[in-house]
Image (tube, rainbow, N blue to C red; front, side, top):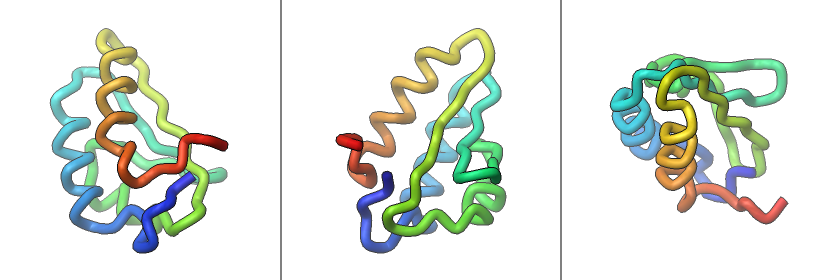
Amino acid sequence: MVKDPAGLHARPAARFVQAASRYESRIVIRQGEREADAKSLIALLGLTIRPSSEIVLAADGPDADAALDGLVAELAPYLDQSS
C-alpha cells in the first residue's frame, strides 16, 4: 500500500521508470483492474496512484526476479509493506 502522502507522484515515478528500464523483462504495475507498463512514465502516471492505493508489481522475462527485487527496493520509501 502506498504510504507517501503525495502518492506515487512525478519525481519518484520517474526514478522508478528509469530503474525499470535497466531490466530486460516486461514489468507492469497493477492498481485494481488497471495496469501500466513500468517502463513508461506516462502510463505509470496515468494510474494516478494515490495514498493508500494498493499496487501489485509483476515481471516476466529473463531477469524477472532481479527486476522485482530491485524495483521493490526502489519503491520501499513510498510503501507500507506490512499489509
